[in-house]
Length: 218
Image (cartoon, rainbow, N blue to C red; front, side, top):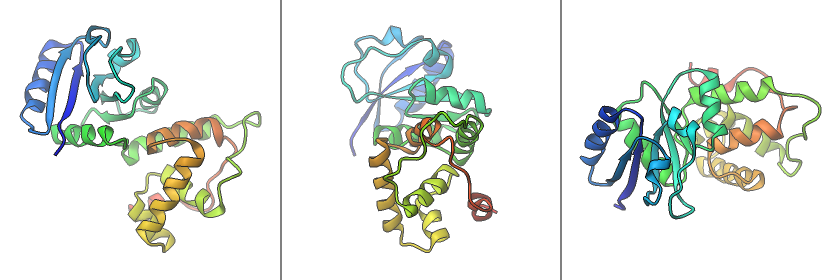
């Protein structure tokens, strides 16, 4: 298994040192440093920067390589804070109640280019998109097919590929292919980036019918 180089950024020494100790116990993670600010890690190479939101708001890391990704943790469970994570360019975010193993899973997901985006986070982002609709923005990319729009709507509601497959009566691989084409057409690489793109591209887009997410998860 490939080792992931992780840099930790948090203003509290006990928290960042404690995280370094906990994450360092995982053979597939290598903590390359623990810093008080993003600026302090200048010149440090990392695959993923695990950073609290306050430090992330203060500035971006100057690290070698274009592939470094930012995972914001200890995020408050409210819409405004979750939206801030998207606006600062985070690759993913973890809520305050996330356990260490969830952080580890999030690091692996972000390193692989997949945003660890819970249904709660997606719900906040999509609600924000809906609240900012107006007639001055462009409509949903016309190159999307009707099926792709339907899949996009279900992704935005927080459904997994398997849940979407069950809801639409499709094979999981077929849904995966639809999601991949939606990502390509909207020029995004993860579910979190997709919701950020929706903020700009689909202000006129509306749900059709009742909420599949509510019924699937009921």
